[in-house]
Image (cartoon, rainbow, N blue to C red; front, side, top):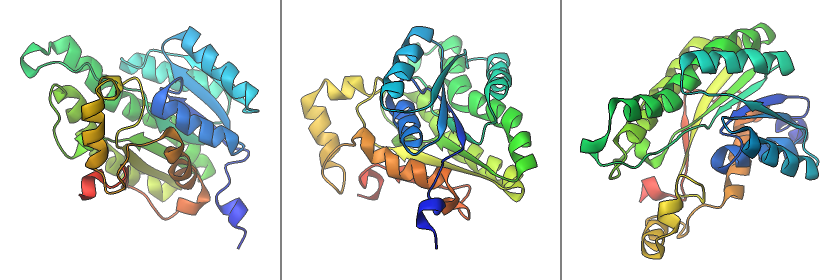
Length: 254
């Protein structure tokens, strides 16, 4: 058994939304350090360029693709532009936002933005990119679930609804495309140091409380995402699809 080849992503190209920071950037870095070309997608061109330059310094083959994924048209145009840049083998849907508003203060615009990013963009990107993957009988799609896929947190109703939905969308994608060689799975990060969790990390008492909720006894470090990303993006996970892997230190197990 060639274990190095089994877990390899060399020669593959990954499109990573939300790839300029946090979870998305960490997953992109893991794939890039493993030998894949990575195309980072985000709305802000300046932030993207900064991330790409940092990855170049690490020897990663990285490109930037600025796109607004908050509309169906924007997501579909992103997929079109990505396929002009390279053959997309791996899709990681990590773009998202949590506005952290009280339930009664959420406007239709706020709701639509968060649902569009967490559910709409993964759906439309998959719809556009999966057919070409299917022609090659190989593809990997990784969605981002959350602790809120399973439990509610205060002031996060649209975010939680989107993260609950992404688990079912992951199953639906698997059902539709896995017969064509495309696996689709989700990862559910616990508390990691990202822009979305900044309010938690700015509160030492809350940060400690969340760490104490895990079986391991600490919050996540971005490098904890590297192994699961390589596993789900490679041939090592060829018979795993439609599943959600919680990377939460045992938060949901305790």
